[in-house]
Length: 107
Length: 166
Image 1 (cartoon, helix red, strand yellow):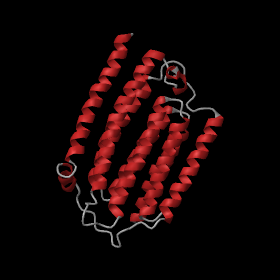
Image 2 (image 1 turned 90 degrees about the vertical axis):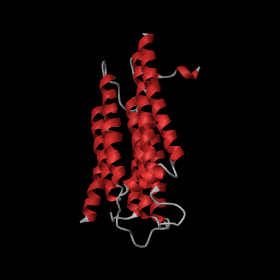
Image 3 (image 1 turned 120 degrees about the vertical axis):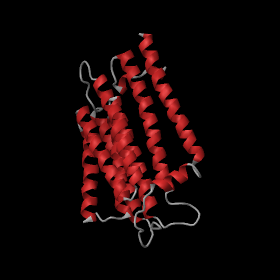
Image 4 (image 1 turned 45 degrees about the vertical axis):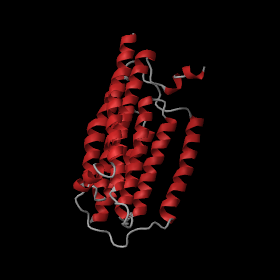
């Protein structure tokens, strides 16, 4: 593929869709987490690709895209820490991390 | 030459990504995720985002992936459960994902993006990003730091309570 904006967008769409497929089809809670990481990476790649290729404007710095990717990475770190804490806590309580077993909230 | 390196990084990103989605072994999936994250870091560097590339390697590979592998190791005692759901759900997921993928790729390739006519040479970005973080984006930056602190305390609290509850 040539070094151009659509190539990067196609790569990040692939990352997003494979991540979504992982989230939808995994039974293992940690597998679901990996899918979420892929989705977040696709979003970050999109931001950086747009900040590189779009036409510069007078009002906003194009580096804003990279700043947003930084925020995405920070939020991903926080999200993974909390999610793994929940998974470990569920594991110590129910002895499994199969997401199909967690049905208590159905009432 | 640049195109060759670019395509190598694309392959390095996308092929392990399929493995993450389709592998039947959670450890293989975790290590494929490692290669994918490295590939994305390389793509960031190719986009002239040196600082983001380094942060990606440090935070994702040095932090998040290690956490995930720890999680895999701590929850794999006893019998291994099947990693994916049964077939009808899989087909539904694949169809849904495929439709969205086609729509996204058509949007990406057919749209008229306001692309700059001449690409500037990549400049060092760290200083400019620092200016933005402590100027225009000061409040989101502080909120993110509070969020990280809250996540840290919350994660410890959740695990601690479950251990004490036993």
